Image (cartoon, rainbow, N blue to C red):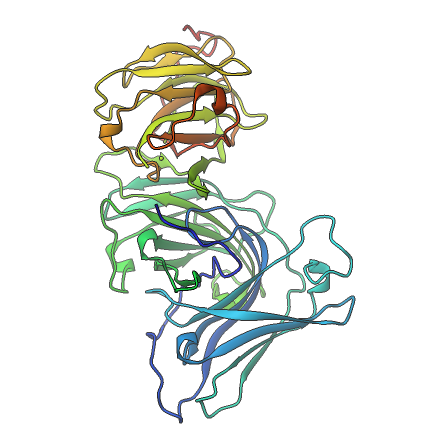
Length: 451
């Protein structure tokens, strides 16, 4: 099991870069310190299965600093608390990846409610000028300084309903724009999860980023092609990746200059995925997060009554499915054929515990009782199948709902190594393993929910 290192050093990911240099070893005393793409942004980070922090932050740094941070360069971001007049200093951390070899960044977690009027993390106290400074004792020029401000920025929401379709070599990701907010563009970053590396102190060194692209505000899908991978990596089957879809707001309102230096605010949502086998229908990807050793998959998807949605996590032997507050109930379920030797066991929640309802063969639609259910559980997945709980497309489950609304529920994998007793399931943190949108299949009648 991978150990995650979560902290303010995390989620320090660059955007799409042009003319990016490779990581360099600098030994000459006559080298010049070069900084490109300094940035200061309001950053809204979603949960993820990488080692990136989630929450709201002030994000500062630079796209490329040469010599880089692994060759003696250091950086700071400084501002004055507008209430107290005190100096606030943040250390800029060097990071690398195939896409961003000379990157620097810092995430400064900010208060979002009941903030102390004088606190350094109160965003109202952080709207003055920020000075980003970089220096290296072996270079000949003076420290490089940049003056930026957060004035006029603020939190922006995430995109919704990320779907994966296409082929393994040309996967297409589509999304729904956030509501009630101006969008100047989007950024699509992809990370190969197993390329993340850490130093001996547990600090993140390599983010595992393998590609990046910017698109305009009216674009809500992106097809990844092999030509996007110009850094010695490419999409591989059987490998877990994470896509990061970012909403961008620019300093000058530009919809074409989407460089980090011109981005004032962003929101970033993450979904894990593997390349789909040929012929797989479109899959709605969940937001993936790990809490301890538990993988949780959560959704934000607009649903309609009578339409089929497919949802999909150590080895998984079962799943718990639950709707979010105010969501329409589940009306029916159909479970995938993964070669399980026996029918699945289906349990429904009676308000205090899961109660056995029926056995269910693969690819068989089961209608819940009239009115549907808000929570149910599936057991009986053979451990010898080795179902991967980290793969959001490993157990694509078809669901219909009792009516229209928003599905913000969860799917939690139950693993072979830790299988809780039924009496403890109610106390588990519930989360959906993965939601896959397989297509439309109208039910005969929403009122006909025969058991």
